[in-house]
Length: 316
Image 1 (spheres, one colour):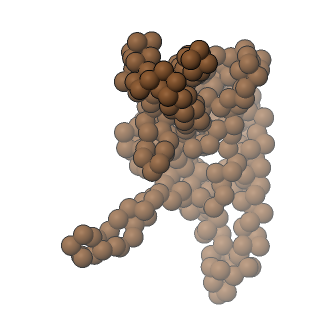
Image 2: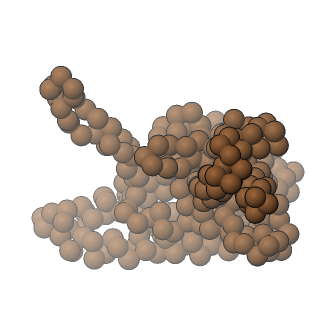
Image 3: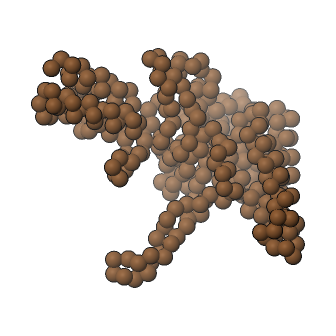
């Protein structure tokens, strides 16, 4: 799992808490800290049965690929159940990291010389292989920075406008994770990628984390992931998370209903209104779910609403 975030968003403490939930109270957690030992500020917050501090701490001063790999290998060899890497941005842009090694090996040929990258790229790929190929759980944090563009405002004056957030790592690093999310200043984790697939009793493939928004994710969220990992296909009942998605250029903040179910419900509502008269769908929504609109529903409620609306339409 990868957790991206600006400074102060809560990515480090969330990583520790989530991992404690994933490995359980009896699990052993290793923490690889390149953030000047900042993880020690959370010592004791999420203790394990045999880890009163919550994790065993390894501080990195040298952020070379070799240093990261040594720490990962030691964690695996000593029987840990999970590793926190806080953060992987330093492997790329920290002291001794990939970008420094490129500068050093390129010499007078400059940063864009193939000479420097010829050595750096295989090292970086080896780091990725160690993270993704680890036989134990891994949660990685990643720094992000704001990007701005200078544009004309309504008065014709130049002003900066935030155009996005750039992850401090090599482009494409996000492909490596089973679950990836970005935290904001309100400590909301917005899931941007999820391979958390399951199958409903009806045989429908579901992704409970797709576009989910979790405020202050912690041990309970980690326990949810552990339950999914350990459950047979189709036997796991996912919790309902809030979600965000875009419809016709407007951001919808839902109570858990997915975009696909939301759009299907709107379509079913329009057909029910046509068959039974205007306001039919809204009246059913208020009477059955006490909800002002479809966006307020959870995913199971949305599915149920669609069934009721289709029954109404068929009975006309």
